[in-house]
Length: 340
Image 1 (cartoon, rainbow, N blue to C red):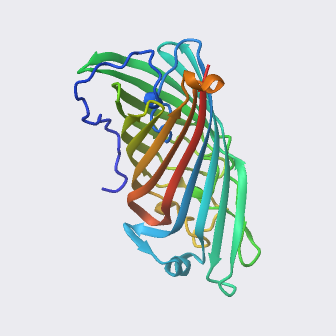
Image 2: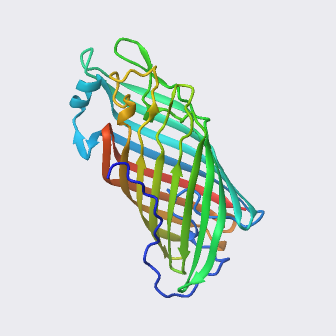
Image 3: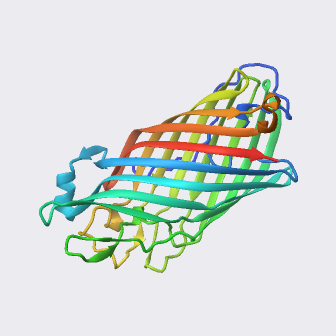
């Protein structure tokens, strides 16, 4: 079902009876897998600072559920990005206003490296590198549930925020005639609009296991200075993690995402110049599987106690697009976090 709304939050069925994890226990899986944003709250007056890096690799194209050749995409558009590597550097700052309310700020800096191939001018190819700040997210996490049941701690909170338009929407490329055009919508660094972020998160914890689920949805409002707005984006994910040796945990996560077409049109981007330029062929859906690792230094590590390292690697299980869009190869997330 196209543009499927993955909005239902369902916990994994792992509620076997075990002793309850103490609220003040520090374990590697106290945080969700690192690919999940806004998964936990902090106590009143507590800060957390962190750095996240996310790398996304795309190669080739897909239309509907089928892979399509680069040559066929070039016949329709003339130019296409055969490969793209996108890296996002994110600063994460969290502060516990009260035990029930945590604020989170996340600015980001992005780098995109694309290999463009053209069917014109002898079929030349060239690399294109862009580096810019992306949009900045400000989010409030508000607790709505803390309960012990079934031998486990259960928690839930709301995620309510806004994405601020600090990212560029004017990135350009040069075609084989040396004409300058805006890059397609999915290759810009920002949305150009103030976008509400609405969602909810559930987590469960026991001494050796933890699990959770989350939905986060970005709603686009208005139009940006280039005359369009990105399509709404919906995500949902569920995970389970197992503590191993007390210092690290291993996680498995399923993630679904769906996004809609662009509303309006960037007049500086002719529809038939480059793949991804048609605003009516931007929607799609994707399901990914991730494996992750969280490492938490304990009191035995001295000055490193409380420092957390995390990694997660994901590949797509299913993709369906309304028009030719880049095919995801993998996603990699790395992070460092410290609470004080």
